[in-house]
Image (cartoon, rainbow, N blue to C red):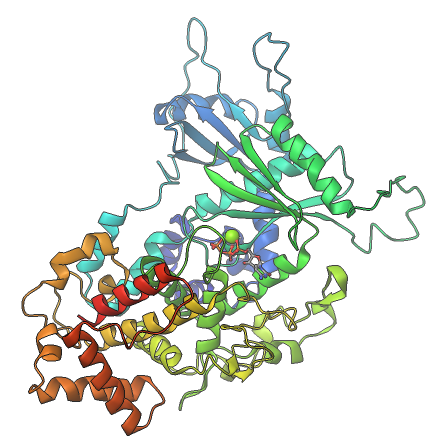
Length: 611
Ligand code: CTP
Ligand code: MG
């Protein structure tokens, strides 16, 4: 995104640049301020973006209102106390209306908070000072306010695009690459979505301010790593802020503190009490669940004002640095995020990912798989560098040590990365998506692990079905939860997807291109299986059932040859097996699974896809 801005500014197209800035998808306004005044830089750092987002949250409030029509009154009322920068409107799933108001400074916002009243004279309700407020209706004659000098920055700006509309728009695209870009543009977390996430973090920070000195609550994970979609969960971490300045011996007066005694981890005990506070004191937070025995203990809660499912943990800075690393890879080339969105969406629709934790692959692992694929060298070079290249180039200011002495040091300022380390080819998104599936269709999951540190496959240290090296803790496998069956399904689905995309001949039927990969089974159903003139499909029923039909066998053979590292003999055998299976409906060639439900599911997919 910053590259686009830079180009527009440099080429004098400032009107387009401003238009982009006013759109809801702009990361943050610091871009505008900085780009016009400073020495031009190609990349912003993650820390710069986060600092700007946190500052925005400190000068903003979220007010529950009656409806979008409350805008004039609210604007007029707040303007009595402070200067309003902008106001966004959104609704939560309960149909309640809210306005996020950004003031021109934090002091301005504090003036507004000072003006706040409390609830009814109800002794059971103990109000809480936080940036989440509601706008009381006036009794009697209403004040009259002039028409605001600004209009609403967004109306109903928090709602994700409806699937039907998205799919329809995608069907009207000119190319598969356009479909991928559209999917990203329409479903990625927008400006308001990001602001609300920082507001929730700020609210918790405010509540805990009196309990902890110098704490920060930071969003991490998909809310900030550039791979978040509208409605994704909010991962939060509560951390101590230990700057050199705060720890300086020159500061002679130091807060007394308290070490937690007892056998259990202090973090577990802190989290327990934080859970109580969330339930009792944080307006909007509810349904708190304590998961304290996990490797990283967390509190899960729902934030009703913003409709966010939140996970709060303590002192997990490695999660923040991991988000920073993903954000950087996404910033290096404009194709990284759209491609990842397409892959994640495909994985969701074929049932490879699941909102509940379990034995399936996660979005985080899929993201690492996309990054790893983009690190592969082609004739023109690679699109992304290996992480080890960023580590090698790190300087003193890049040193970061997380909990348990975890070294999270890598180059933070991407402007220092030589341009021949990334974006070394111009492949279209469409090509990259197909190559992604082909790459994993041929990947040796049996013996090799995926490591974005190295950028090339490495030997697997154990026999787990899927091994993806944790980039910041290389002794760990981020996909250790993935079962044998799920890994088999992954292999099968990447092949099916490659076949399906490969078979696209430009004929825009109702599920052409990316649509064929991401439309839900329920919407495709039988209609699709029975479609006459299945020309875009790689293998049709007729072709497979008709043994005399040599071209079909040839096509199947050539695809298999390309997608699998098999010899001619092996390919012939596979083709024969697949045809036998379909012709005779026999189960004897089935892969053996421990779980019969999974077995049936795998074979249902295999059957559906081939047909
Ligand atoms: N994380 C990690 N190691 C893991 C799993 C997760 O460091 N084995 C960190 C990553 O920074 C990840 C974050 O925790 O982004 C949050 O994890 P999760 O919520 O599972 O993934 P998200 O990236 O947030 O994706 P989603 O949209 O599915 O929530
Ligand atoms: Mg998450």
